[in-house]
Length: 584
Image (tube, rainbow, N blue to C red):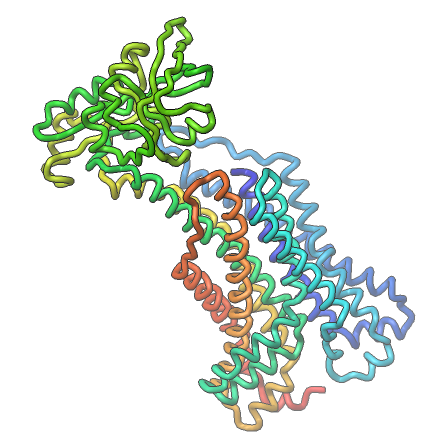
């Protein structure tokens, strides 16, 4: 859990880097004349750079201290809210290593993020900057940047596809490296990708709002690098969320199929909390049910069959065919009544066994015997119900007086019903330590844990989404300050406050849609690539694209961008026309 939390913290910091870099880029652009004046009166480039980096260092130090204090308070609050009610709360542990790491990382990150904006500002000649009434024109995306981004993206995609289509223990490592390169290449190319994306969405905006949609599209493309950096933060968060959604939906479907595909009974009885141990005596209680068929799954360990370590599962030969779906490929399941065993195909293939073979049996206590294979059936190694080796319960009882009854399967005459459930509960003595599950409850129990884990991951990723939304709000707010004279001119030409407000919100919509689209596509691709590595070891795993969940994630991202634009849009709509148009 600590590694997972550190991983999500790293994602949040990575997303925050784009916010910090964008902020310093805009601040440096607004202070171009001030910095040029320092250069003109004798300050060297190194001194100006030192001033800006010191500012970033101070911002990082203050933010780190505030974040450390806030995080400690949140940890104490969570311990109070979710700690055990019947036991004293565990003491809050704050190690020197945690304090030092937090302060160092939080202080160094703004300095690193500000390095490129500061270097870019130092290339502006002082005389040219002193003569500019407006901030210097934004740098355009150049050929070297495009070439590097394309190389990273293509290399990452090739590595991810190669890892997905090959087998071996290093496949996930290759996919991980490919994912990192793909994400990096996409981030580098986002300024270039923004133009075709806006061109694709622009007709829809201009159809709904001809003037304001056109202005919003133009303003979004005014500084492609700024647009790309803002959308990249959102794209990273959506990539992780979409990838997790694909993996979670695929795993849920696989577990659902693995749980219920072999389940032919009406009910399954098992310990309610997983800690209680059932014995064959529990299954005997259900033999009194009229018209019902039941069988225990008595797991007995410590066998060596033909020299291979094995686990035998004892069942009632007369009832098991009605309770579990056996796809017999060789022999017959009726051989269980003759004292023979049935073996899963993967176990027989691994051990080199075949139908009709008699295997020597050994127990750790020295008891020996022999068993004959009477059937071979197709089974999934990951099946939760179908045993690897099925044996008659009389055979297991001969060698193990106290096997562990993992579950008891029950089928009633009339199928699942309230009366049948009540009858089973009464036969078990209304024991609260035993759970009686039908197929729906069994499916929910096995796949519900994945949903709970995904909810935890989504909650952690919401922090990255919040940071990305703050980045959009910050970018739009600084953009409004830079365009104050332009906005005042628009107001003077007849654009009302509602129109200005709408223009800023449409800009936020474009930023959010760009980040959501790229993040969703990348997330689905990476989810597919990682899922391919599971197919080798998890038979029956197939890709499931949860379109509804992906659409919801994209809508949340776009809605977050629109909410982030409320304050900048409000400020833009309140720009004073005389003072804005008179500004130099």
